[in-house]
Length: 280
Image 1 (cartoon, one colour):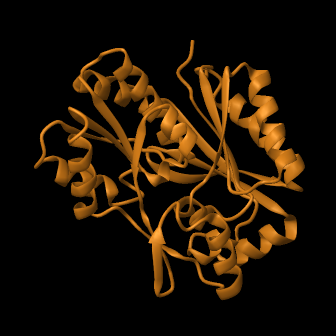
Image 2: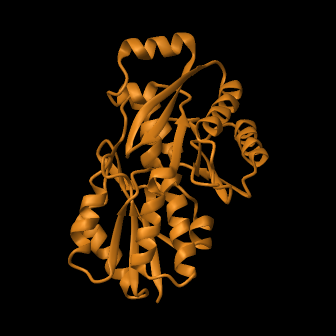
């Protein structure tokens, strides 16, 4: 049985990884004032420039039912079944839209990953590997859903500017973070983004501390693979994070640049390490 593995562009992986694991994506929409475009076509650099020039955050729109219908119908012409892994339902309407469309199609299965970015990618790659072993769609969905609670997704922000503009950080907290050079950790738990530890200092010192904390907090990783995902962080900072993950024993460390939907919320120079914490 030929099975398509699908997600939205909030999966945040580049085309070479999508091609390697045969993962298909459907784009969110990014709105910059009266202009709009697909996530992926509008790049993070465009987002950063727009915010700097206008002082306004772009808006993002979830994949709607029509887009999902077109996406799934196209895949079903080539594949016997589709397994779609969606951005957390508590963060977006995309999951609900996909579910409603899937009800009217045969052999389309939709999973609420309760995650974002490359947390979704880790599950999608796992789904592809299970499909390659010849498992049925129902078996794959069951095994993927069993791993969802163990996906460790977190980031450390370089700036609270975007949180403040998005109404998720008060002016007082924003001022304090600037004064004290605070860089907050954001954790994804039960599909929601929650605050973690507040780091202070330069990114070159904060990021290694954040990586160490992540590996300490979630200390039973599946060492098959992990992601270092960033929004245009400095190369030396990315390399430090990669080195630490390799030293921990991860066999494959994939570097990924976040797409525009995600960077619209986290801002520039954000970095996260993401892995599944269900190893022995």
